[in-house]
Picture 1: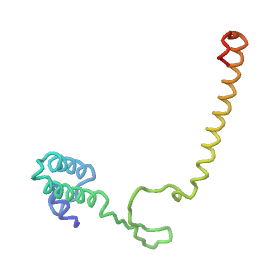
Picture 2 (picture 1 turned 180 degrees about the vertical axis):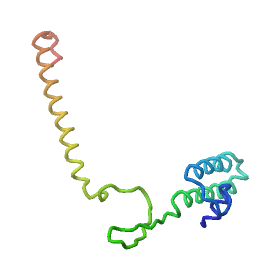
Picture 3 (picture 1 turned 180 degrees about the horizontal axis):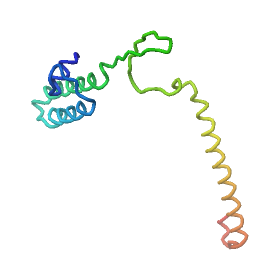
Picture 4 (picture 1 turned 30 degrees about the horizontal axis):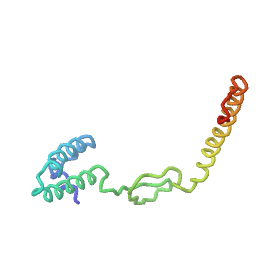
Length: 136
């Protein structure tokens, strides 16, 4: 979708340059007006297509078509296509390293908590002996 078309769909002038907060406010307004759940079943397919166009226009204006130009430290230009959720520090390569400390914390808590509970149960059993043969 072209930038001019996206601006027109969201209610801006073709050559204007709205800020991201203006784009967001216009998108919310248009999304509320064109949401398919607000229309009867007979008009829902048209409303869905309009809603998809509005969403595409919002994405186009918010992210700059999803393509941005970056200049590296060496001075060369490179194009970066943004898609999905950004990954910190290389993504899932260190997944096991993150899971190991968590595993130690969980196992340590269960082990220490279990031994404390066992000691408390034994103390209570010695202090208040049961005469019921079915209880441990």
